[in-house]
Length: 293
Image 1 (cartoon, one colour):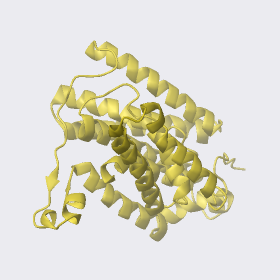
Image 2 (spheres, one colour):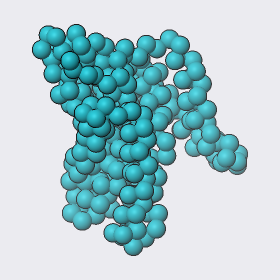
Image 3 (cartoon, one colour):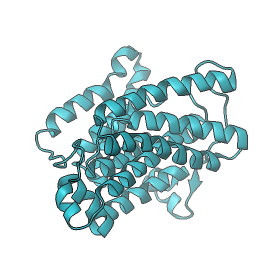
Image 4 (spheres, one colour):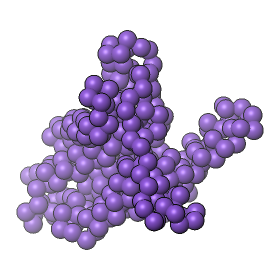
């Protein structure tokens, strides 16, 4: 369940940071897909999975800049821009897979990341296997969860991110550069989206498959709402959806029609959103462009 929840958690935390600054990041789905593709391409041509991870983080962060530029500078509708990035990501990754590898729908296998056992701790019954025999990006995700929670709620930069998402004009009057803070938040969400894609591609199947993000970016947005825009809450929400996907895989062996089992995570998403939306309070200025006088 932790393994399945990891890309959701990374994308959800990125979405949390971005939306805390006031920018809606519908583009998470596309950023995961681009990250997965770039990680495989770089790993394929360099033979280094870690360079693949680095490439995924950088390129997805650059793609996130598009969202930032259109949303912050041009004040375009953030939902429409995010949707356009998702569509573009789906098309360009499919086209480049055919163009670079001369294969439709999937790339060849590449070097991936292997599990790392933490000495002594990995031998602890039950807990050791779950938490201390994982792959590197999963360990990194635990660190990111704790670090992002601390930064967002215990540091000056975290206060500034939350301030521009709640009352950007008030933040502006005390000297906070609203645009720079929002740019920073969107770039971080892009980098985490790329890391989520690299985890999927290099730690799970070690290749790129067309549309392998499979709606995880949208589920991450639901986990974001479920977690009330906090990194730890988003992670817990991701675990819930990870459980649903693990359940989907488990009951699949009972010859239940896949058309039914494939619906489970999405049905849970609808239920959670219906239940959580009434109690969750979004940042006041979420989705609203800031116009400086």
